[in-house]
Structures are given as structure tokens and as C-alpha cells.
Image 1 (tube, rainbow, N blue to C red):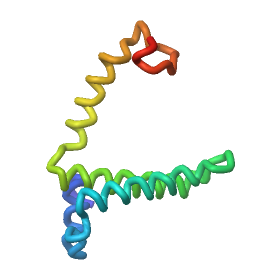
Image 2 (image 1 turned 180 degrees about the vertical axis):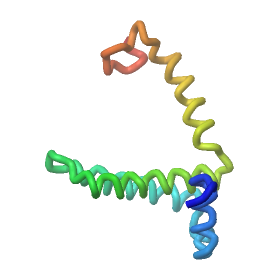
Image 3 (image 1 turned 30 degrees about the vertical axis):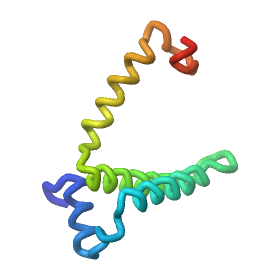
Image 4 (image 1 turned 60 degrees about the horizontal axis):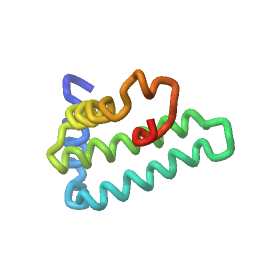
Length: 105
């Protein structure tokens, strides 16, 4: 791979195959859910099959990137914005070392 971003590489991959016609937001969201279930299956009986987990995680991330692109959202921007919101819900002094939901801190 040369100097392309993951987004650009995915766009080229999809365009070469004329798959964008199938990539509605609904279909991409369904694909994320399906691939997430396949990722979870890698951990179903205890020890993870790390090679399979890696491949399934790549599938989940791929569909997430494709959905963000379809919705004209930048993945880094939306993750950082959500993290900022989450930081205010879970201040370090109240949340450190705890898994308590924010409304119970």
C-alpha cells in the first residue's frame, strides 16, 4: 500500500467491484452487527482464537469505516467527540477503577 488512507483504499476496493450500490447505511449497519457477532464467537468458549478474532475485527472495522464514509463522517472526529462527551460523564476522580454507570457515580 502506498500513501493512501484506509478510507481511500476501501473506496478504491469498493469502486473497483461496483459494490457501493449495495452499501446503504442500513446494509452497512447490518453488516457491522453480523460481523460483531462473528467476532464474539471467537471468544465463545473461553480462550480466543486470535487469528480469527483479528480477521473478524478487521471486518467490523471495515464496515464501520464504510458506514462512516457513506454518512460523510470522519471516524477520528466522531470518536474523539464521543470520547469528550464520555469524559464529562465519567470524571477520573469518580470513575477510576469502577465500572459503575455514569448516572450512579
